[in-house]
Length: 315
Image (cartoon, rainbow, N blue to C red):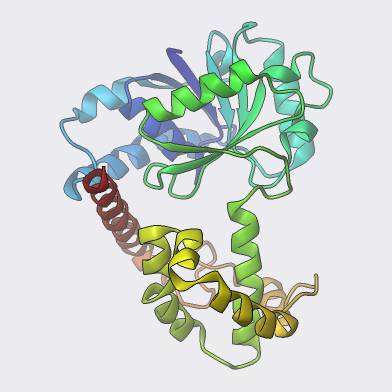
């Protein structure tokens, strides 16, 4: 593969495009929003500068990376003659399926069509396509240019050849592709995250702990252990006999319904979406947003580098 196309250049798309460009691929970009499209190069350049400052990138020429990113003025222009097309557009099934239907008409027979969906099974996205065997989900995590893991989820008709090519491609760009062997809504990591959020929101809603104290507690305990070893190995170290007893005692009292928590419903109704609206569990003043986001990314990069160095030393 030589040419990559990224459709949708918002929160996820620009980081995905950047990752491929840093790895040496020619990347064609498009977003239907002109403002987003016109700002993508500046956002990528800022990301690269921060990564260089934090030691996550070595020996790259910024101008070379940027020169490999071609911002197109139309969707067809971006997709045709591309080897690998990934969409990071709105999380709407009809919108995504319509895109793949259009895309299939203009790409070559060997082109691979990928979705960065956070929830839709690939079999639903590929339904109705002439060649569903070349369609696959590749689920990145925000920020895409920093977080190493990408979930690879084949659909019912995805060919093993396409899976193998995608796994090889993602290894080649320095990612850690994790193949899932069965389609489930939300894949693996989002399911784990939502299950944890359900319990954490419940604890805050009940007044057991404040949001800020919960963050501090997780950062200083579970996050360290899981980042260092992974939850299943931590379970091995702790002893499943002990954890089995704790499981038996706690599970009956855990939140298990399917209703949205009152605390979350209230925040949404008030427009408190988090950093995008300036208010969530924390306040995000508009004049400080760039610094807040930059500092957050730096912390992510520090942890990513630490884990990378640790893995290298283990080998």
